[in-house]
Length: 390
Image 1 (spheres, rainbow, N blue to C red):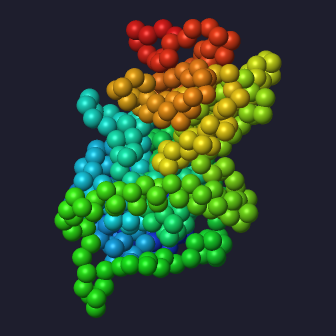
Image 2: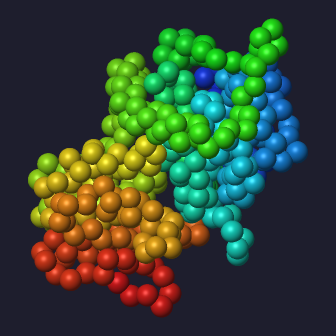
Image 3: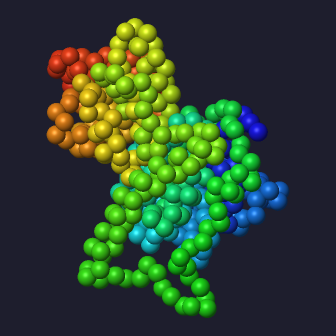
């Protein structure tokens, strides 16, 4: 069945189809519609879940961790300042190996206040131990909630997952979305069966004070689980594709890369516009390609290196800024490709929710192609920014 729905509605349906047990919730624009839809599902008897109205986002993640530790499948959602407010408990959930799934509607964080799309909210917790996947459209938003539970609950992983969707660009925009049948989802996603859980019959404690003698081993275990997640993500992507007919490529997805001389690396909704520009430039005889960076954690270093090793120049599009020069995706990609001696150009665009247009993306490709020919190009370029010319 197909419905024309917003990204927030798609995420809520994904949670319902995943048969979550507990939904602690607190509203914040632009994710509020997610929990409103779930509240309707629960109220109307369409969803058998405990809906908890909390007093703050910090309480939301506290309740999510507690419910997950007690053996429940948990879903929640947040955005921007809400994600910042739960910062302490976000960093507690991953080391405790609690496979919570939380959608984040990307929205600019900090002053001056803004409510539009920027990735500086989720990038602020990129090293918290959570997996992060950035979706391109509403269909992927729904499908990745379902896949997220399979990934998170796999015994090789047991880490929380954060599907990220562009605020307003997806959250409040309608698109046709294929809604899977509940029986099909049930056969893909079995009930959650935790290996370890809190049980009053067997009193135990988790998250207690830990001395220095053990913390490094804990971090090493989390790092190993994050690394193991790469294989699990690809396996589950293939399994999902066979069952539902939609293949997202796993950690990354490539487009027209076979003979490309220059390529852009993109995340989120910018990918859709970039793919169209690739087609137009190909018609003009320019050999360009595209890599969709889906998972930022775990970061697909080897996959990017393999996909880009024969490219003459690379452009990386960022919708947030890291104050060591350029954006986070640019810095991570440059680190992953260290030693390949390929020019890597950063393109900053869309910060604060500004539109990223075909014209801007054409300019990104133009600069990247110039670098491919050996011309000197600035390593970091601000697009559609007052006082900046590229």
